[in-house]
Amino acid sequence: MMKFKTSKKNMKDSYNKIIGISYCGLQNLLRYENEIAYSTRVEGWSCDYYSIEGVLFSTGYAPLNNKNVNCNYETINKYENLAREINNSNFTYEEKQKAVKYLLSELIKEVTN
Image (tube, rainbow, N blue to C red; front, side, top):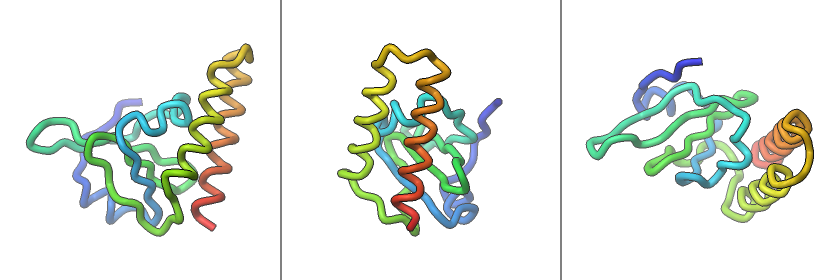
């Protein structure tokens, strides 16, 4: 799937729930997901966007701010560390993918309730 270039304003207006994370902050949790879009700024690339279960994940050098989610560093770090353990395990690719996608769903449930 090709990702498209968009504005941050467009993405903010298009999603009711947004999780904004700094560059590489969710690399293990998002490993099996595809970006849908990206934004740029004067300096170059700004952030990538992932749309998962109706929630927009914005990750990069200048990601969007959180919107209508109860998300903090500790919560993100907890799920990212669990995903790292899974990705470093001896599971098959498919098992890793399934387990990490489950963690991602659990993160979404926790921060959107």
